[in-house]
Image 1 (tube, rainbow over the protein chains, first blue to last red):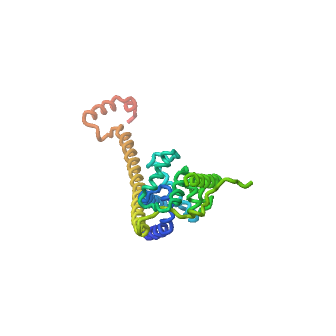
Image 2 (cartoon, helix red, strand yellow; image 1 turned 135 degrees about the vertical axis):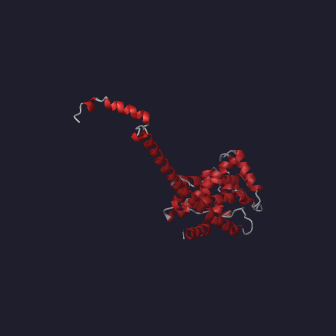
Image 3 (cartoon, rainbow over the protein chains, first blue to last red; image 1 turned 60 degrees about the horizontal axis):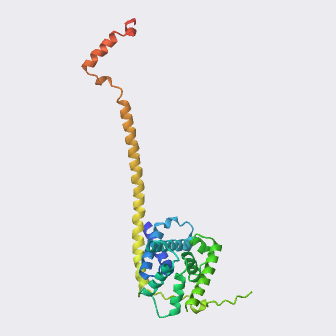
Length: 170
Length: 107
């Protein structure tokens, strides 16, 4: 009975969050293969700690927090640390061009993603969660363990930087 | 005050991304994830439960063993009467005969 309940819950969560979490992770780690690995680790963590989720209303925040932590942990492992060094940014931008599952046909879309990748990790995560996932600032603050005000500020700074990056590189 | 600074129009891009996935990726991935998460946490859950039980049993055995050992050591300091051999019996007799208290008793 417990296994059956667990299986039903697993199916439900995978159906609901597989795609949004995949895209959230993919925007952070860029490569499809890496996103796939991080997504698997994320779901393993979700089910290992499922009993800790007391409030069902916080489910979305909780799963996004796990996915974000897994993606950032993975980035730290891969690059030792996530920084905004010029070399680091150019290597991430290069990896975007070298990635197999990237459509290189639209130059503006590529430039836009390169601009996002060039942001510091916190601004990148805030921008993606707000712009693509349309999450409210209080949820973003919960996911990234920050304040609502800091999330708003990071979003506006990120938008400004992306705008400048595109205008400078067009 | 209105800023004259040129801004990028985000509507030009919208929510489009250059990222793609292999064909049928999400269908395959969903099944893989279901197999993975239903199997893996179940193992971890039960193993964690057994670790708790095993640790408790081990601790209980250790406490019982320690208590039994201390009790055995303290008991072994008193030599039981039945364990005295014939040589000791002679000494005990001499002691009893020379005992002032016993000599003064009105039998």
